[in-house]
Image (tube, rainbow, N blue to C red; front, side, top):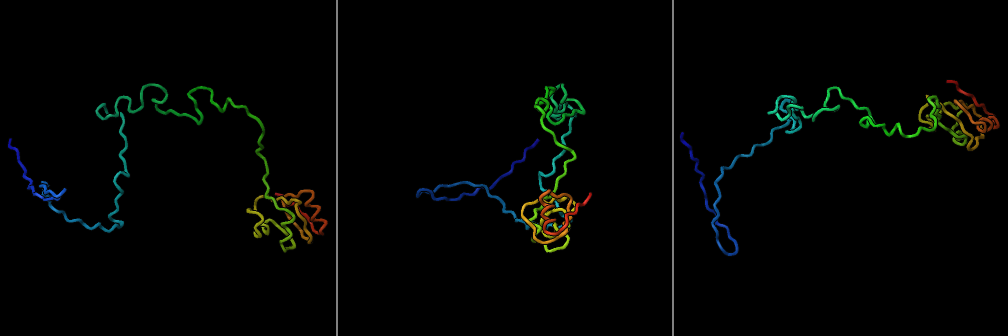
Length: 186
């Protein structure tokens, strides 16, 4: 068996250092021509290196590095197939959420109203005020959600106000001004 020997030409370069000349040997390297980057177009798109990883193959023998227990450790619930833990699971210990006392009540049938005051109705120049008009004037966000009129402020003009609910003082204020308070049933 013959071994090939490759020869590298060595050139000497003189470098000045502290008023002395030293010979430094550096290997001669062929200069490569730098290629211009190709235009990126749909036909030559490539995903960047490292953006796509190969899937980890498990259970392919001890030589693969992922054999025997296939990266799952040994025994127990976490090594089994189909293992599942619910949120707040504490390994079979009584979870904290079950130890904490439960207090209060939240109704499933609570009604959430959009609130408009009487003083806000004063700046609307309409004979009948509906939720659609209230939305256009920017007093409510959703014309399909229920609206409640409260008695803060006062109204001086006679207007028919349509809403889903009225406070007692609001309905009195509207009637005293010569208008009507009409309840919309949904």
